[in-house]
Image (cartoon, rainbow, N blue to C red; front, side, top):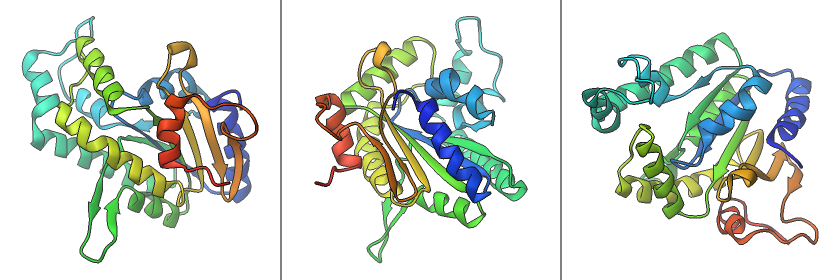
Length: 245
């Protein structure tokens, strides 16, 4: 499997046979490069809108300067105001809800870190939203961008902040990282198709396709055969999709 686009095209063949609209959940740790993957590779291929809470916030804040900087008050509101963060998340959910009612194809971006234990032993998570999409008649593709460690996530976010991107407190990054991995491991079992990609290495190796599954069929796994899987990839891939046999 040479690229995410090749994998997407295989997924779409099955989706079109099922005669269902496509919904994409683009998931990954903070700083994993989800938006970059979408912008550079997937947007023109898929030709559908990506619903993103950060971009939704930016649409109602003052125009960014040429270097991407916001006025200090606007950056503070975007990065630290819990009430507005909640509003932007609710805005995403409302947008997705309207898209589902219209049965139009769409993609949504998420860290996928919500993982809350309930009293009956089950968990509340973004997987519930995948099921809602399926109930509404969608074929759901889960795309996950993995990172080898939380330290890599922290470093990427720090770099993003230096480039006037949005900040995330380190304690939140540390809390979210394992929750995202747990949730993705379960979500793979629910989504109609999944594409796992790595962005732990150099820019030349960015978004290495690691595993593709369509319905019950494993289409590709980097660990199959006699090839040696890089340890930085195995570190997270064995957590979210343990290799059997």
